Length: 216
Image (tube, rainbow, N blue to C red; front, side, top):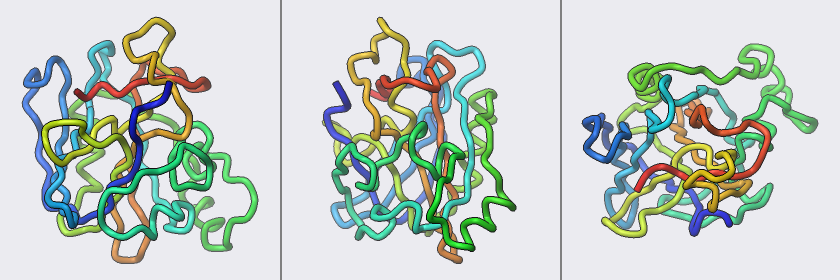
């Protein structure tokens, strides 16, 4: 079954900070504080994995706002998203703007960006390298979109801000398998384009459904 809840938080990035290793089990996080009408949200982004000696895998993309519609046009606040194409939900494997298979219907500007910024492979590295890649797009004061699952306790916040499919059969995260429920962190630049950070765990498959976030 998929995640219990899935959606996107639209707000303004207040600040970010690194968590201490082992303060939440064996996972290391970069934490975002995002201001929205309901208050200040804490968004915990995994940058290390319990089962991976090389940490997470990630990619950083530059995306036009139009490829994120309707999510990019939502007002500040948390919004539930249907787990379907076209709802604003993300899927690292199926969304044409994220998986490198752009398809048809691009504007000339988006097509030009593809030539300048071609589809990028996943990068493997340490938690420190993943943190640095994420922090490069975290500019305080920028509008931000955080895709994932809202906290079910502990106040305002977001978790599972990473790929949420592809975990192996029999793993503790298998029960939350699902497509169109992946997480990501995106900040909007002054020119209207988005800098996007996507991440997944090295234990996750790249072609199947499945997966559960490791934040608790």
